[in-house]
Image 1 (cartoon, one colour):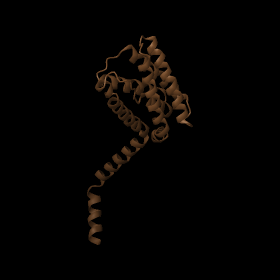
Image 2 (cartoon, rainbow, N blue to C red):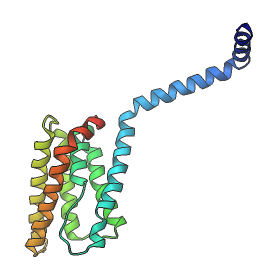
Image 3 (cartoon, one colour):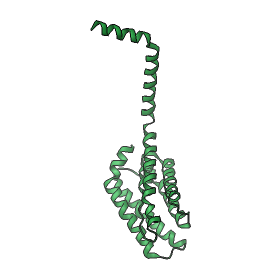
Length: 191
């Protein structure tokens, strides 16, 4: 036992400066990670949402003409707005929407601009909302957003009201599921 203690003492004596330097580096890294944990969580969430949103919108290219609207932009913009504020919400609204359109080779159309404008409006409003009943808040925003997009598309010349209604209905149903079953959990992770 004395031999082990002596070897440890000799090791620490010979390498004390390196051990102290490594210890300081490790402590500083822990401090940085904990100090910027919200930023790390935000970046990870943005990446997950953007990649998921891109894959979810792939069906538009694979199944053209089928009026479905599955997207994560409204959901993620509301959660990020409540958890982190206006600028991160605006960023995710624009970034996730444009990445999904670009990577799925969708050319920006006037209809895409209506949606993008609505997402930015959500980003501007959501930071001022309480997270106490995220399901109700989320669904009110989803319904209002879909009404804006529905009537905005009509104003921009989209005349197929059945498809327009189908887009809105599937989007409301999909976001109902997200806000009902996932919002509280994900918002808890973000905050």
